[in-house]
Image (cartoon, rainbow, N blue to C red; front, side, top):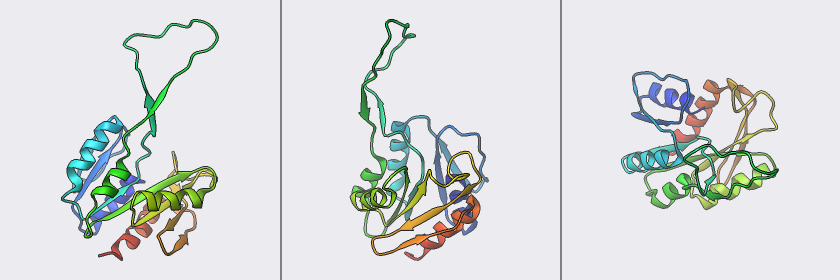
Length: 182
């Protein structure tokens, strides 16, 4: 979805910086691409570019937690159980929401599995987003490993459900919504 959004913005004449995790997708030469592998790398790259941006669209599926401790060598099988303690990762959307100026726009994504609208609305408010794009794992053939998506755009005052369509068309819908702020 991020690549479709980046291409749509570039097609409309925007100067685009795409910060991408490890994926096997390519983008046009009009887009400045920064590849990252960890949440920390994405956090650092995003913060370094946000100050000069008019808008940021946060659609990466960044891990919310990471192991407290990592092993330098293989962990051998011993016993029947093993536990991993987790700690929260850096919250990119929350940090950008704190730094956002009155002239910047911030769009988030929420992939939810239950109480979808309530969770998305909470994220919209708590992270100071202008609107949030709700994805649902309940919509078969959408989100991950699919060229299609079905979204609902939620703003503080409105909710707009969309039909299932190719991600390129979904990107147009999202950017049309974002353009209303400029």
